[in-house]
Length: 115
Length: 114
Image (cartoon, rainbow over all chains, first blue to last red; front, side, top):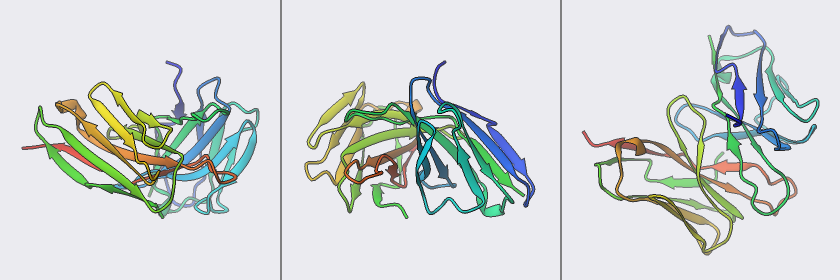
């Protein structure tokens, strides 16, 4: 299967701990997105990479959140000093760039529970 | 907050029925996408619409991109039990400088009639 993969699928942590999630996009896709989805809501945009460059960040991405895509392939999303309000599903999506028909394909998500 | 209003919020289906849901926006989008999400999984793309007025089918699914570019609908014909799930519309705006992000509706929860 060559779809978007995310690890871990589930993470339980205690408040105040740091967590890191990984996303591996579809191999030929140079655009990568992170979204957050809370229970009963649609996904909300967090940040976006074109290759290794982080081109946009949402106001939802507080100072405790950092994302990287060092070689333009996989990406990591780190949350420092987690809070209970960080509990959510974190989704990664990728797409090819260029052209009018850019479609984003999502991974299975990482579900975070902060106790 | 989210800009897309999706309705209905939930619906019950009986096998064989046709199902309709729609999405409206206060702003224009250049692309409309429909996704289905099962519990604990990521959204799976169903249909993508790239032109105003476009009507596209994918098996039993049909979706249209509204002429005003502010709305879209999704129809499911002859529903089957595996159609149960949450359906999301998403709009993408490429006019703005960094507008590749998707804006999602709140979802339509499709459930089976007891």
